[in-house]
Length: 112
Length: 113
Image 1 (cartoon, rainbow over the protein chains, first blue to last red):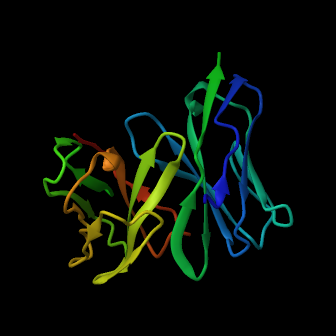
Image 2: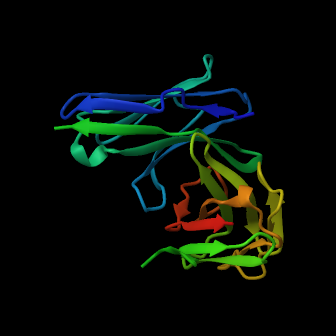
């Protein structure tokens, strides 16, 4: 059973607007959360991460929010650009466990 | 250039014919891992290695073997491939573990007939 869930397989957004990607997890031991971005025919690349001691982390146009009580995190992209069109994977890990669990991914399409 | 390389990039084989997918990293990373990507399932971890000679199972280890005899190399071995192992495979490495930023290879597209 998947411990990290991305319930929206796809998201379409107009250029310049905000993209919000959601991720839920079930394992309360997870304390590190990461987002990866993947273009076709390439390997995933790291985008941004957050640890459970924080509820927000920002890097340029990308912000990740963590709600531990709801076991929910979200990635905000503002403003969205055509180059942001890709598959975004949410991932989670626990400090004492070297495993990494991924969600199924959300395909973002930014329309001009 | 810091990178993770995988070979081959594409492979078509038949059921039962042993194969090895190689993975190498030049960043002196302690941690290496293999994932498979399937539609609707995202990335699933097959095996990972915390250091030389130390490996452990991920979520979907059945039908796969790994070894870590050198820090830079982490080959994935399919002793007797089956059609349900048809997938896109990624190798990745990081400084310490899954909670660190991982660097991924370009992927290996495997088809088992």
